Amino acid sequence: MEVASQPFCYLSEIRPKHVRAWRQAIANAGEGIFTVFVAGQAEYFLGSADLSLHFSGYTRWFDSSRMRVIPHPWSSAERPDETAIEWADKPSLHVGFMGSTYEGSRAGQIVNRAPGAVRDWVLTGHHLRSADLYAAALTARLPLTYAGTFVRSRTMAAMRKTPLAKGGEFRCEARNGFGGTAAEIAAYAEHLVWSTYVLCPRGIENYSFRLYEALRFGRVPVIIDTDMVLPPDVDWPKVALIVPFGELDRLPEIISADWKVRSASAFRERQALARAAAASLDSGQWLERVASEIARRAVSKGAVARRFGEQLAPALG
Image (cartoon, rainbow, N blue to C red; front, side, top):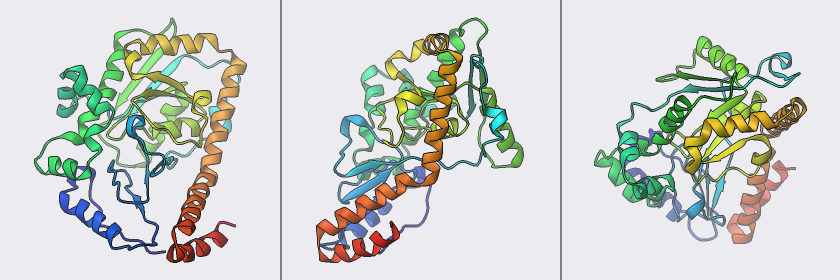
């Protein structure tokens, strides 16, 4: 197996030269080589690779033959003692968010005030379909990187506008950044323990890693569905509350209604499913599935790829 890597750069710093280098690396692989493009946190989609792995995707143009959305279960917040997170009775109606709200994002504000067609264009990621044009736009200093963050600021606005059911509490702890200090990690873990529902609106990418942290802490992720493609490794409707973007203004009402209809035993069952899902992700089974698919498809592509597949197969057991 051969790995071609490029120097690290932040999403906002990617330029056409980087995209050209990626395309050239794929082109240089030659026939009979199965190529995989791993974009990391960058939402770049190159159609020239046989398969691309991403943490987020858009349903309206997701190509299941060439794209895979994988989970992002890594976190600096370690799960506390079981007694601290386990629900013995029905939990309180606590809705929490800690992190960057992007309420000061100029790009997000512009999109939020734009006509509905523009917001839909951003929400469905159409500005990302061409990596070359997107990189050129960043070179021209067009702030497209933060265009989709208006969803997060609108989520906070919706929660502040309408109160939760009687006795419910919404806690938004805005942060401008995360330095990874012990105090910050402890505060975040404490926030997750307090929360029953964890708001998980998208940020720069079309997902939030809070999805996986909420599962790890046995909490209910509240997913604002912005044309998201979610990893198939979790039964999301069972462990999360999924709210279409079009119903965002009703978010407090929807959360309150979900809380009211669920008994203590229903919450405990949901928590058990969330923790089981987190344990499954931690086991790496999803990674084995992806690696097996790469090996299988590499074998089917040709003799050169078959050597790669045969070497990979024993490692997968």
